[in-house]
Length: 370
Figure 1 (tube, rainbow, N blue to C red):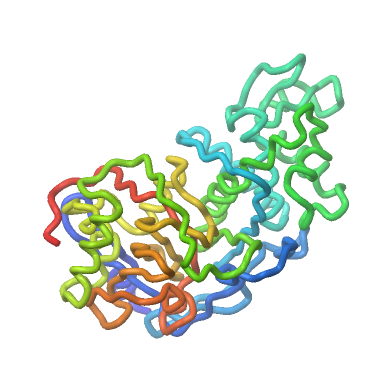
Figure 2: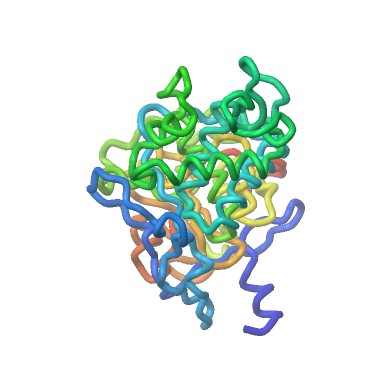
């Protein structure tokens, strides 16, 4: 594809002061990350020690084909209630280091999820020079237990390597519950505490693994939308979720929304512009704010549904409830349509589902025109 065309097709959303472009994948493959199966067990993705968990099926976009090795599935199976926290730039950087060590060792993404969740519980992703007794570092490893010197264990790369050395010796680590595997490595006094961080860990791993890594929750069946959970959003917008849904329905059939996905959902919530350059950038900001739910297939009404498109921009739609979404460019180019959300993942466009997030719009401003 020519460079000019790459630029034109890559953008999806609103610039901080002007409306930018949105983009979708056409006639590609959904890959394993879209599968919402009825299987109870976590499925291994990659072979554990030599595989990134790519979808193995290339995505077609704008007449060209994207290699499958750029698309990675990060498998999750949350156990019990999940905790979502705000992650600072320094903490995201530490999660990226843990993730990158897994990549350089050619481990599957599940290893990074377990490691990042462990560090979330042990240190809140802070590289501590203190802890219980002689514990230090991201994983609160103890020199007296043979993990290394205090200086070594406060080196995030060294500490991550030592964690993975122990992890790969745990039988069945790819498919066993996260807390069981983490406890086998750490031998903590609170063995069940690791479980609550699985979704947040998956969000950070997917974000830092690569542009087209998406998390997938391997639990439960497809929702029929009849029992949408109640929305308990803590974010503030010009409109409530109910008002945003009503605005999106009023906009159905309107034109002029070509490649303006992030602007459309922002306008539904009362803003003139979203404050994010692309839908993918918007998702990344909500991950850091602890407002994302990667791979979760049970969004509440009014949630923002995010998708990977095989390009850097991504896509976002507004969830209306009963498995229906409002989205631009799906029914026809530039037009707002209301469709079943399977149309985005299994229909013509073949997007890969990232997950849902609270309708927060950092840096948004202006007044909606719809």
